[in-house]
Length: 429
Image (tube, rainbow, N blue to C red; front, side, top):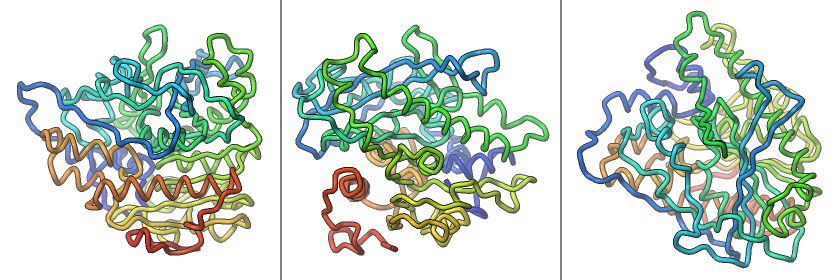
């Protein structure tokens, strides 16, 4: 999610404004106009990093329908969502028991000419078998006794599917959290439903519309995301009555200790939902700007209520370096939030990183680049030049330290100030 004035090359002017919220959409799309040759060999494969916590992980997917809300992107239809829960279990995953990273239909679309793999990250279409990537979670495993456990919601970037933060999500679950990931239907690249329906994003088709008010589209997307998240929170309280739920899962959720983390537009969603809903105790914004483009799409900014009002509960800003967000002083929305907030807050910037460094782009794309799915320059635009292992370790460590402190009362003091453990992280408090 780039700051105002960031130089973004796009095919159409409208995509520039969307790129301001989606982050790498513009740069990746521009770099992917001439992707690497697909060739005739087998599809590329990649692996997620091992979670660092002591617990095996279970996961289950749920289909939710909001009977009281019309879908804002599809008038006349009720709002439907897919979410996944990730949680500690005593049943380790192995072989075929490991849940796929994406469902086959979703993976094919993500890897296609209209998917976010190309549009956001510049991966050559048809080159990667995304559904063959395996998570470290056992599907529908019973929850580990010993709860209830703090709950963390995860929201992805604009256009990204809920799976695009799996490395971080699995790590939190392995440390003892229940993590809930949310797909924002018709904005996400694709959402696979249990009946076989694949709901694809409406955003790419909107970009070329004459006179399109990009600011209005982005405000609609954020309003929808916040409403989705609050609806999910409502439904989590009724999981005990849901048939077919993995054993012990409903009892594993402590809904008095809820945090939220997101990347790009998901980071915006985390803090805006926190502002609007007191059920969220603490939030992490990973490189998500907190402003909209002005009326003409490229001059001036409009601040959301979270930036104008500030927050009275703890939050952490995590920025990136280079041509991306920087620290809180480099963004009008972050700076306004900082000045208006009374709750504990800190800002960390990962030197050498780029917008995708806080997503699964960081562990997966370097592997795919070695197999010719994207070139070295596109990889640098996506994740910078920081070593992938260091970026992953820093992201996991700072997010876990934050939630341990504010949801568990366990303080490892990483967030007290600059850390010798992470010299690549600039800290401001």
